Length: 313
Image (cartoon, rainbow, N blue to C red):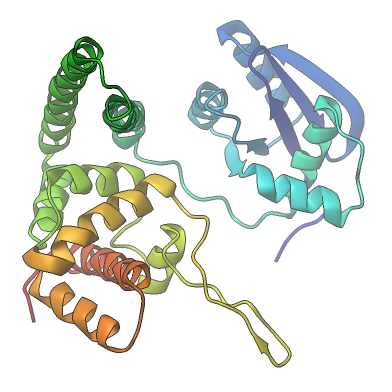
């Protein structure tokens, strides 16, 4: 049961400053978003007897704050910006500034259910290298597209050299991530289980293990929803809306969709059969591939839950 009178703090995170508010106090605090400011924040929260702290994801500026608060023993709830905006709309709050946002975040934290446990610090440390890898891959794709628009051999040669350099960097980054995962016995075992699935290679496995560590401890429906691969209803009365996927963890969904294409055409006999069945029923190509990506995720969740390698039916 939610305790609406519980004391909670909310922190609006900026690049340079941290604005703090409490649910039971009209005062507002501001701290610098640096090592010294974060220590002052922790000390103030302790002096006020705060246990739960709510924060809003803010493009990465929140990471050091979350890490420090969790290490200090606070119950940390990290909200998506859309959650705080929806709460503001529910409360009919139109005014917006950093102090007001901190108060809204505090109210959200007070009404939130039990916070999830702190993530595995080993995987948290690998989140940034994974993001760099994803950005490198995006750069390669952009350069390939740009190269197609030029006719000058000199310019195309320059772009080809840059693509070659980035591909070498990408390979080195993958190797470092794989070494970091396989250096830990429990993570290495999870890695082996995931790559046992036909159609999932090392690159996809790295994304799944680092960006979605909950796999193996949830239902298939929860996994699909968390990855943004669950089709949601759009019905009202007699109107039946089109089912669509949305939200979730974009990098996980992108990795699975990319893996589903070759898997559904060659590497995974179960997915090949699924894709053909869906196409035979008149489903468009993209919808069939999304279903195959969702099935791949279900396979991953199952092998990690059972702790046994995948076997084709």
